[in-house]
Image (cartoon, one colour):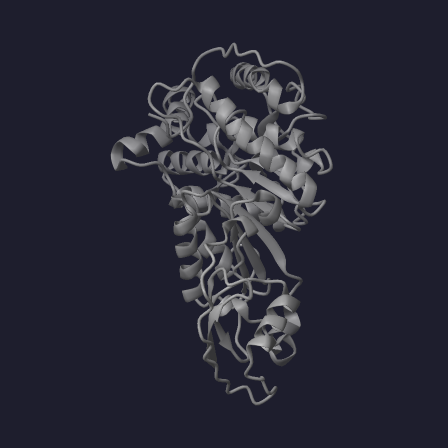
Length: 437
């Protein structure tokens, strides 16, 4: 393999390109990110490609770059010779995955799980499209370099940029992680407005350029209302395709039940998180099962279930910060992986999983037109149905109504971002998000 080192035809940036039958795809940058023009460097090229003679001329390099319409560097500049690779006989059509907040701690764990094949399977090539900001862009380049150096055969393309209209083009999955954390003294209403504007813009971009069946998982907090804002700004994408991440809360609840029952966590099933991803969320022990039996039959301590268990799950993120000095990142990344896999693999018979989804048409009597965590089942096609075989008692329903009231109040706070009128904030109380101090 040879190397071509020089500037792109526009003379705008250094391009280092391995030549030959290499593996990879493209690391692109948005047009507005071009660096100041510099004089082109001399080009030094050599090739050991015996299958195709490469002419040693700058004109040929420019023509190839123009034909590919990709500005890139490193191993991602080359295209696999798919016909020569016997493994690709079983490989599927490329899946395009956008990740916002891609230079952050959560993404630092998530991206390598995606690239390894852990999420979509060992026969599924992917393209990663990473959205950052002006402040994070240099770090984003470092992330791309690490992905490059990891030699993942399924990772065919890495693109980076700051413009969602470019990064989100044709994406099949959008994992929206980037959001501003609540700072000291910041009111929840202010956080709703600041992050809501981010998700309104990203919803518009998805609506304009993403796949019409793109699946969107909102992680940035307040994730339920951010998901609603994003959805309302993307009317051409089915509302059912938007999710708010509550899988980490489900995983935390399963852990606590397993510890109390003295079993391994894989014995816990049918765990639902109802409502908002805040300290009003409702971990449902009424419908949960432990080794196939109702949790209340295995754990007979009702007081513990109603008080300590519930509060532990609600406040787990805050306690983690107190212990470690930072919010959860690795476990959040794992929960994103779990959330995706729950949609792309069939749900085990009789079980379900939690996700914040659109309530319109729900069978539980929960207020419509909000994003609310509920029990879901999937056939593995990326879609889901709400579980109907759930029990409800007064304790559970009372708490569901409380978290519902909070989400309805949040919805009024962001009416100016959903196209539903003038915002009016009257939150029942300033509840914290899991992980806030």
